[in-house]
Length: 319
Ligand code: TXA
Ligand code: MG
Image (cartoon, rainbow, N blue to C red; front, side, top):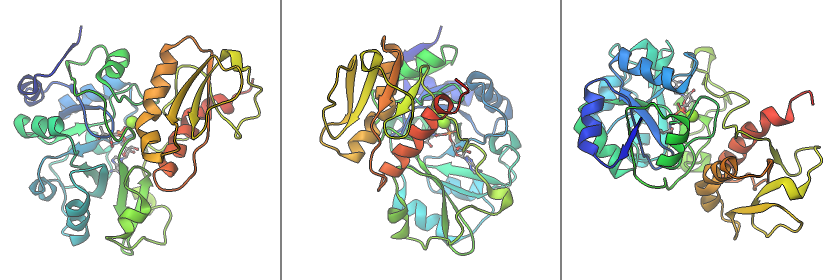
């Protein structure tokens, strides 16, 4: 049985000894192990039931770690890090030899991020390691924004560090660089416009062949019951069986239950609530979930990316 608690020293010791610990970041909870210990990293893939083609992000607590993890001396990396770290930005860079292939799915690149959370930073510092960590959910399922969500999906992890509810609520923006500029591989709280304040965007929409982001599947973040986005489904909805995730208005109709992403239509608040509300309806007695779409501006792009992937398998079945 997993222990849940607030003992950072103990968690750091577990990581240093090759164990696996779930910990809070500002985005979602991560499932961490010593990134330079292949056996420890293998445990992450086992617990998550994650396919080996999906690479992990390496979490650092200081800027010096960048130089250990990459062979690149591209000054744009430091420019991004100094502007957005600690924070919800993962920078994909050419990897150095010390990063084991299991971390990067044998890609030549590694994703690095410094999370903006005091517990995460303390954990990384005290463990004396750089920490490989995917989101602490079973592969393909809803990401965790609370320790309880981790416990629900991963009861066998060595320890869960409880830091309460995460603030940003969706995973980091993943960015890489080509000769021309930056390319966003996964949308998040740090938007294209934010990145454009520091670097030029590349005209390429996707990176060159060996720089693709293998984790970006069409179906992901799926709740354990059907999810439909209003206006994007042709299924007929019986409101009396549905939980409604509302944005910017109070739903009319006889819905079984209603949760708000943001009553006042605030996208940052909506992002913070998205996975939270999906978990709430997973655990409630509604038969399925319907969600309002949100405007695709700013962090709204990341919200719709997650919602569409979460709904994908339920809108692309034969039934
Ligand atoms: O906010 C976050 O990023 C959270 C917290 C725990 O830091 N972590 C997270 O990890 O979301 P994960 O494993 O669920 O998602 C990592 C994403 C995947 O889509 C993966 O394909 C991409 O980052 N990625 C990682 N390394 C990469 C690389 N070398 N090249 C391209 N994409 C990479
Ligand atoms: Mg994930």
